[in-house]
Image (cartoon, rainbow, N blue to C red; front, side, top):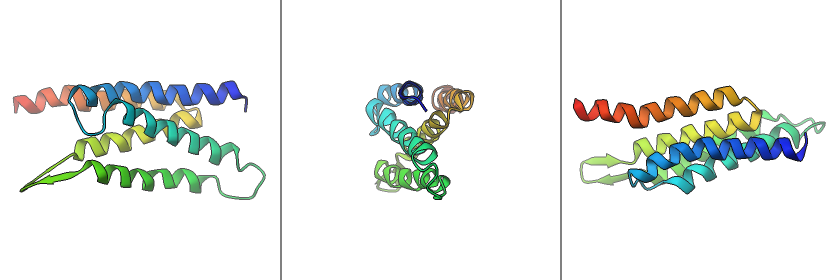
Length: 135
């Protein structure tokens, strides 16, 4: 894999997640623009490392990618806070989980799935919020 291909995959992960991060930043959530870019960049890098860095070693490349999901759980837990009887930050934690998936998809070169996932997340975060406010 060329350095240009690695660069493209990581930049696509950052750009797509940046769109989601802008929505979180506008709403002034704990995890905003930069966090939503850093998560998929890391996920894409780990995906690339597992897919191409372990070639010929006999190690299962899926093990590293699978651990991305677990690792994001720790970040998501940090975004969740309890205020009295209510819990806040669940949507932000879920959006971090989703951008990790975008990073993993971009790192694999599955750009159409990364783009579709980004679109669905934006619809959920923005448009469904409008519907929720009406209800």
